[in-house]
Length: 259
Image (cartoon, rainbow, N blue to C red; front, side):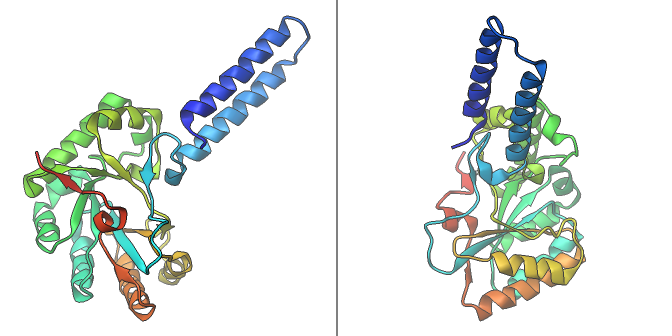
């Protein structure tokens, strides 16, 4: 498995060997630059892919599940749109997991109450969801995790176990913070891209092409087009005999832990 630790070790050994060789033969500086670029490229690509497990282990699906069961997750709420999402989920008697942003919890505590009262799960999605979250040090990340946990735990009365990093990007700092917080990273293997794409048909077709047993779907509860796609998608699942189950059941992990 390609991880940050063994990749770094490999390239450090390569660079040390080049430095030793340079004592005996002429080696162009460009070899060091090229190796450095390759190293950084591998790190950047894998840091941006949550399913790479490059920095931390992420649970992105259950490949051992052969029956037609999947899980639904929503990021970036709660928001006014979350209410419409909840209405659709209730209509189809489906439960989902909502990865919530701390500052949005403060704005809409009543929506968190409804999410939980209707049998859905909640997880941590950072406090700020800042564009610079990937550049935060471990201390700052841990502060964000703990602040959002505290907000959610007012409603759950149990310790939050699930965390989804903003944008699905992981870093050494996130790894160090999670080592202390003990959160389990929940990823996905069916990404709708509804956070950027607004065309309902494109989003819908993208999802249904990727549906498979044991999958985790990533949607957002922040825009009207996501509500429309959700209803279409749930109809598709019914027609194709898929059952939506919780992330807990899909992965056999607990979303909360007793204090």
